[in-house]
Image (cartoon, rainbow, N blue to C red):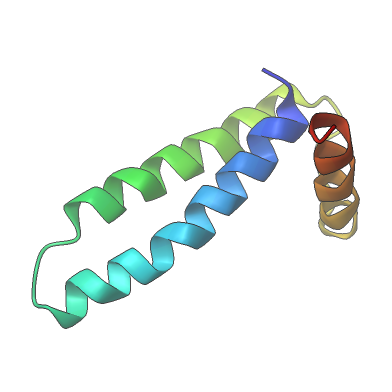
Length: 74
């Protein structure tokens, strides 16, 4: 898997799990599914950070998003 794609998927999955966590906490339920998605997102980001030799700078993350979207959208 491409490290850039893994980084983008990890960030998107992590961002989408935040409403689920808040919903579970407001209903006084345990956020089990949300915790699992956060773990998956963290694993994807960690995979991306370990497999890119020079790593990622915070300034280049928006460029990575644009590159991944441009690469996978027809």
